[in-house]
Length: 293
Picture 1 (cartoon, helix red, strand yellow):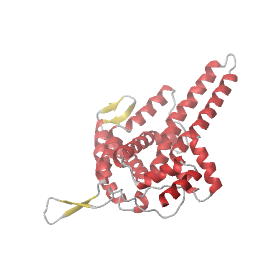
Picture 2 (tube, one colour):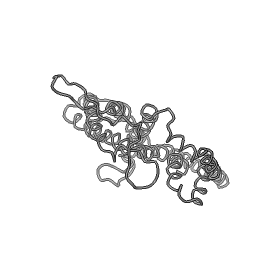
Picture 3 (tube, helix red, strand yellow):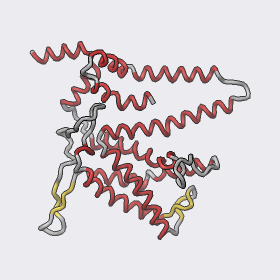
Picture 4 (cartoon, one colour):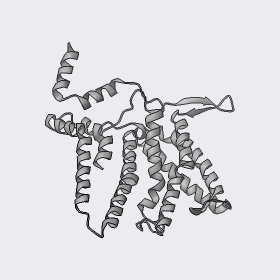
């Protein structure tokens, strides 16, 4: 957790404490050596595991060790991408999460009313009719929801620190600016946000690939002959049962944003971030004095 969440939140933490010299030094030092600290904490746990191995318990202990790593990979590592998406703008958390919910609900209703052809053996109740109907519904919903959510600044603005103040859009975020696209009739214009085209990619992933997270969970439960991962939600299992597809979607949303939405060229803001992250307080003062000359 320290490694995965710290990796995404380190810069926001540094930006939050820049006004306090002592705290800034402590946080900057932690951020700089975070990977080193996390690695040796892991090695300490690894050594403790080896030292506590007991005869006739090897199989059980190694199975628990494997389970721990699987949970870290499948839950904590993937959920950290959800946190990262929130800091890039709540839009990039709320839209993907909403699309998964819409796809799940649409698949149920289309399958219930029109389902005849089985989709996959792992989930006998899943049908091709439900899968296709849910895919179309999710794609349309993605296009419409992106237009609605993209109009609200508090949903689209990224957060660069851990404060709770007002947000303002960066100059380079143009995907939320309105564009007019002529409709079929010359007297009508349909306002389109560029982010809506990106939303279609999210909708396509939520429709076709994200459901395999649910199939994986179904196969996993069948392998261990359990119905649900938990019982905290009556009739639906536990939280993990509801989050199987969300985890896959969160990772894709983050990778997609970083690859196709976030600009790759350097801006003044990005350079300043690197200065804060890599230069000591004294080095920053020297740089400030040199720029002043």
